Image 1 (spheres, rainbow, N blue to C red):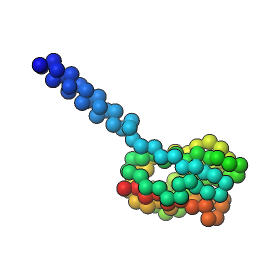
Image 2: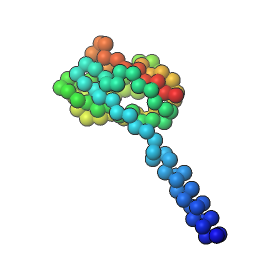
Image 3: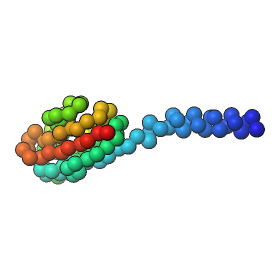
Image 4: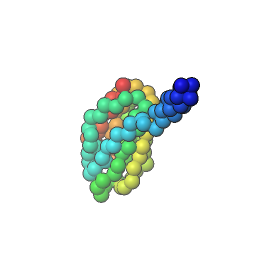
Length: 106
């Protein structure tokens, strides 16, 4: 019985250590003159991964929000950011007016 309790405690400890690995990742497509999803709601700690699809150069730039960040201008590849502060992020491509996205972090 004592051995079973030790095994159960070890299992709980391992599960607690694995929780950060289970943090959510949301993928956004960066297309020619659009972000898909245009509006996104995520939990604090979620990683957002932007994936470039298309032929034109774009970037990801926060114009207003609790955390500022900006990707390089690129035509392919990815950019990821873990959002650790709650609030509303207004994101644009600084090259293409009207290419906008809003992410709400709770």
